Length: 101
Length: 142
Image 1 (cartoon, rainbow over the protein chains, first blue to last red):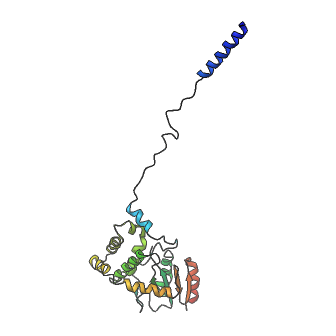
Image 2: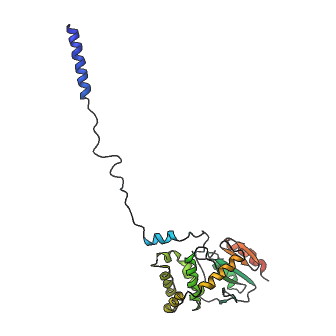
């Protein structure tokens, strides 16, 4: 075996050995996603939330604020039993059909 | 609507030009009926409109109460009602049928949404700004 051939084999073996010893990046000890992401926590709905869900959603034009807390205005009932605010003899009648919530 | 109602009251009810009649609906269900019953019970103590105002002012608070009935009772006491008389009235459920009858009559007259208003014979469906109500009312003032 010639010296050149022996050297060639030696180089080949050396190259193979180096390939096997190349550093491989080891997995980080910190998993991905990182531990800084907040853990999901389970919460129990409060009674308030349950009640709100169980209630029909009101229209956006639902009255929000009312009136006449001072009781200085006349009030009464119609013959049919509906409540009236103001002078029963007023020339204009404004009927409000609405509901709570 | 009741953001507009105070303006209607100041401009037209307090001046004797207009009266407001409340015809409750229950399109939102049993809680609305219970609240309407509470206003009727308050009416026995001449505080119908005050109770109505107290309910509208904090509707969210009623759902946070121990129960709707308890919340309404608290509102009744907050406006100075006799709590025992109010609670007794609520327990009687005596306004339930009249209220439902009124609701049925409203539906029979074509009220199938809310809010709806009638100014003399003119029906208005849906909320309106004060200015639109004023335009109509001003034309009707003798």
